[in-house]
Length: 392
Image (cartoon, rainbow, N blue to C red):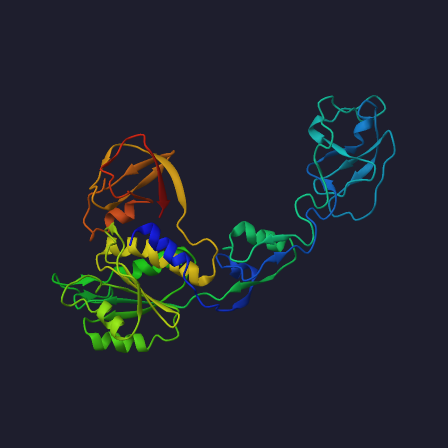
């Protein structure tokens, strides 16, 4: 299946409603809103000054103005002016009635009697923030399905909200498979390898705000796989790495089929993530990632991460796309889609692997912060070509 078809397939999945939970505001960062948020109060809540200065009526700009006093932020008294008057006003202070403009304090000038002289370059309405010009009470300020970022937390706090309703986080289990792998804290001889994949997957998920539980290494045995899956009924999503290709000891696909899991897709038509697979049964999804570390992480980025976002209720599930110019010619194999890993800097994409790599490489992943996917038929991406790429 082509990458764009994988994205569309995941976007169209019918994921069961999982309910929501009410969490403290600071715990909501990175979570998905379970319902629209309605503004409780206007923003600004009252007419006020955007800077320190003098509030006056623009129609009086050519008159010397008597300064009636000062208005400070937090002062809730009512103030008014008539023609020929002004108030010195602090940032955030309530605007006096009769005034419509502020001259900044840095431009203050006075006549012999101590009256304010307004500069000729002051524009009408300068620095006056009008009640409700940003938000009106009753407006939808944040929509259901939005992944909350730091500015959203500020926005919610501005409405006097200390708790917010978010979608229940998906429960995700992580396994590695293979008789040849050992845990990082175990001994490892030269004929074995350390279990890098599980920790890379968990870190990738965590970087997007998803917690997961590591369940250990599954040995290459169908009965062991069945037993492990039977213990994971409470999870919305299971991610495994290894056992994804066509070798004699790759049992994941056949085991899931025997357990009546439905295959959603059996491969992704891109090197090096081709063996990536997705299965489903009774609303539980199983993602099978390739065993090679680079293949595993790219497969996870292209499928498991969007799926986690979909299950979480997020309205936007696809990777962030940016544009750049290719820094140099990159030759590709036109018979397939290719991953090009690189770095984005000053509007340019600097390829690291130029389409050439081993799917087992990890260092190149560590060096890269951007991923470009070529189209089938592309044999070269010329220097200066405009491309779209994903931040990783």
